[in-house]
Image 1: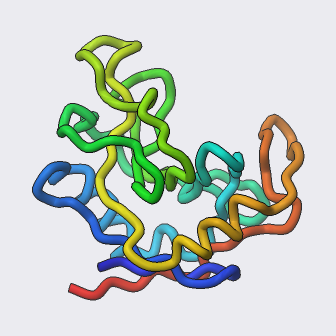
Image 2: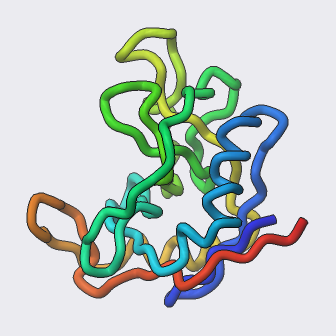
Amino acid sequence: MITLHTNHGDIKLALNAEKAPNTAANFMSYAKDGFYDGTIFHRVIDGFMVQGGGFTEDMDQKRPNEAIANEANNGLSNKTGTIAMARTSDPHSATAQFFINVNDNTFLDFKSESAQGWGYCVFGEVTEGMDVVNKIKAVSTGNRGMHQDVPLEAVIIEKVTIEE
């Protein structure tokens, strides 16, 4: 069990190490190293998802570890309340950034081992604190530099705790 302690409340996550072993281990490694402490949810789109884990409040991008292989072909679906890895257009480019689905985003699911079909790897779900996620998805957003959908008031992951 992992808890994201945010300035909007706590979000508890259960990781699925059985279906997404490398992705869950990757997330756990960042959590244990304190990488997520002081990062923000920098991209919030109501009806879609809330994304965090890569930027400080000043919109400075943190330096992540190496990218991991995409495990989106694990049968898990991007349904409301699941947590998945964010990535670039390269299917195997996920590092530290993640998102929590606030809608059933099945169009993000794995379809085939192709650039367009890989999808986004679900590796866990919110077990408590979906009310907090719903508060976050409702914040006012705007543009900050090149970034869109950035909360006007920072939504901060103050610290992450792990119960094993």
